[in-house]
Image (cartoon, rainbow over all chains, first blue to last red):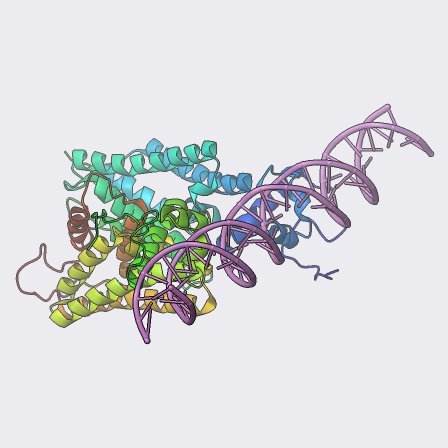
Length: 222
Length: 222
DNA sequence: CACGTAAATTACCCGCAGGAAAGATAAAGT
DNA sequence: ACTTTATCTTTCCTGCGGGTAATTTACGTG
């Protein structure tokens, strides 16, 4: 039917040849294509037919890798969450003052927001998920929020951050960062790293107990 | 006028009496109910049947007041935008330093975000609108963004705000504020005014050229 | 009181997207 | 070579929700 140009980006399914390939690889390809389309058009407007078409396959083929559209949506979110959990663990492992940890978190989180899976954390609506998965999502969001608040509270305690309400401060910072997921375009003027750097300074400069210079070492004095 | 005083969010269509009422009043009631349901369930999940049911009428009756579901969505957004345009005009009329104007904008915008129509500005997806209406929405968002940037640039020029990149700073502030529309619940602990106050300080304290507000501007050379 | 009109209602249509069933095809095992 | 198994296609079903048509109800007015 549609004599599609052989390019079709990087689908493991070339029109009709070289079929068998690693299952996980194809599953990942489905996910990458799906998250792109979901972000482009919105979950409801994006159809599985359209996802399949981009992969040079047909809709029912998708059901070899996922049980439902909702499962695809959930896994997009899960990948984003996984990364956040990852760098939070790293930051915790490295230790440091509250302000230092907060700044690392802001930076990593901002960069993650400029990624498709990262943006999934805020661009998709949990109400599209099953009750089970929605509960998992809620737990994930809660965990991130707790981390922000904890770092802020830690900073107040150790004197690196001046006294403030951790809850509202966390909301303000997280809101700023989450919004990146809504306006960032990969073809924009600024690369993700630059945005992350800017936001790191902008969002924490008002919090430092003493004027601090950029990413230079923070002295923990008590 | 009314035999029995209806509570503010009760339907003007009591099952079978006192029907005829001012057309605009009913139109507004449809809008209020619709925006609530859209926010509760999301635009796609919320059906016109459900909207009608809450009003004690049936779906086709809605078409006496609106031409389509999309038109309802657009008007929800338009009402939110109208308010923003309103207080921006007021702030411009009052004048003042960049910082003063910015703080007023932040405060009013934050409060607006705690309102159904205000939240419409950020909770609904422009892609659900017709091309025409989407263009109007885009223009509105752009106008708000320009205002944020202008106040910041004004502040830098008049010395009330310390030098920074107006574009990213506007993004950071607007992001924080927009996010309120996603987490604020009317039955939460804090009233909108308190949140607005907190955010006003939190989001501008890092920007003031001089430690705190008050006092005349002092030129800071870098 | 009859009539016209606005605003409802009941009944219907239809297009679409998610998903299931059953048939094909290729690779791999025996 | 024959069978098996996973994978992909063709085909179809079904429910749902936006929107329309035809009909009724009720009020205002001459």
